[in-house]
Image (cartoon, helix red, strand yellow):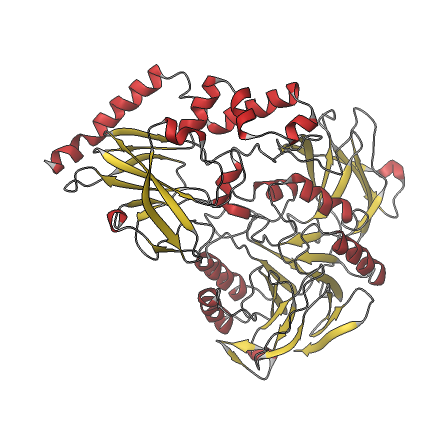
Length: 598
């Protein structure tokens, strides 16, 4: 009997799907489309005070029946082959129950699920026939511990199969003790569950899905809205630093095109060249005063190494241009150079001040690197506006690069905004979203920029290939999560063990980290042991670019230097086979230093 049901599953579901599409007025409307329409209409009809004071009751009053239906059915949907019982498992601390749950026939049970943090989740259940199951939003608030779902058969003798799951990125696993609840929180597990749910299909999710219908206390303002004048001009590298320069900037949407006008420093203005920029629309629909902006990106090619160029950005249509700035290309040799490193910055004005201090003290620094968590929330453009505002006058003259931290790629919703705002090399591992992981060469140093959202195993194989095939004298890794740190739980031990196999085989000189908001430098480490010479091991650095908490810690023997508080920045000077490393505080005091010679 079960074999016959399974064999006819595809045909039956196809028929159901066609009937649903032909009879439903809202089937073609996605949740995003519905929310975009709601927000657009709210902007047209409500002032900023009303937007800021929305409640669930007011939202339900203002949306249409069609929109309400989409929000109740298009958040999560899938097809099942047999009659099932669907359990919606929601956090008891979320005060407002999703509006559709009771209306659509779900009943609250006495069942309770708990996780390793002791958080309690109540279970709501409903029976469904074979066919389509449709579930609604988590709510209009921003409750991050969103509900997850269990599916079990009504007849214990049948096997449940799921097809046409939306979102397709959601993971289907089994409900059991030790199972993940959220795919973006891999240390949070199910600790207690009712026996009746044991072994059922479990749909895990991302905490970031709470943002998909966020309307209550959701609307924000940026302190730095765009205008017709280009601003937030930023230099990065997406190709060879010796012969190219990538330039990015912003305008409002009244400006229809963008151009970089540039020339060598010793050339006359009449010799200026122009490069047309690519334009991308950046939307943050909850920014009340600047929902849409344009981000322009242009790559200047055919440049000469070790050459200073003058440039400005603007539009030929409106004739509005930025102030002229300069940049210098990388040397085509092993000439001495220096760079500055920051740990977490979290769109902090303290970091902005520190950046300008570092720039004034070390005008010879060729570029800047940041170890992730540039912002608090990676999909809030007002956070990026702060970073780019605070760095104005620096990153338009000195290129910058950064690795993605967990806050930049927050809650499992992807890092599309920082990847749209900044252009980096597209030379990362095959099959990985471009620009998340990449490498670049400057002088006699190779930099491997790594990503918290990419598989550590994929990055391990890529790093081994990069290190095995380079003739660089110095090699650096930049990764947000620390391989060695002072936490009670060794969260990244598995990553460290795998990556140290690579570093033992193909030497890496130094790994630069952030995340934990203190300063730490290890002795040279090899496969978990401290070794005498940097030639035999990798030195691991943690830093933070904003004030941290004073936290006395027990320091392991392999730690060479530990400091709490902050902020700090690090300047690294490379001259052939000699590296001088110094950590500075805001007053310019050298707090830590070392010299490595090869």
